Length: 82
Figure (cartoon, rainbow, N blue to C red):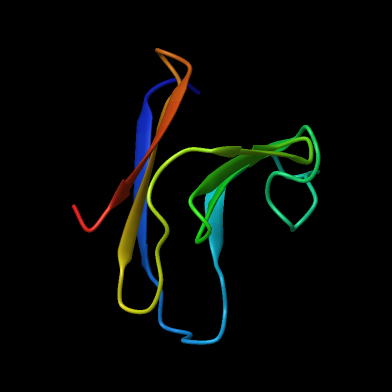
C-alpha cells in the first residue's frame, strides 16, 4: 500500500527516553534494533539494525514528535514540535 502516513506522540514520561518510528509486524518491539524497523530516539539518534547515527535534536518531556513515512518516495522524516 503506497502513500504517506503520519503520526505524532507527546513525550510525557520525565524519566524515560522514547523511540518512535516505523516497522513491519515481525519487527522487534525495540525499534531500530533489527532490520525490520526504523526508529528516532530521545537521544537525537536514528536507528536501524542496531546502528545508531546522529540525526537530529534530542527530545524530552512535553516535546511533540511527528513521524512521516512516504512510501512513494521511500523516505522517513521526523519532526520535533512542528
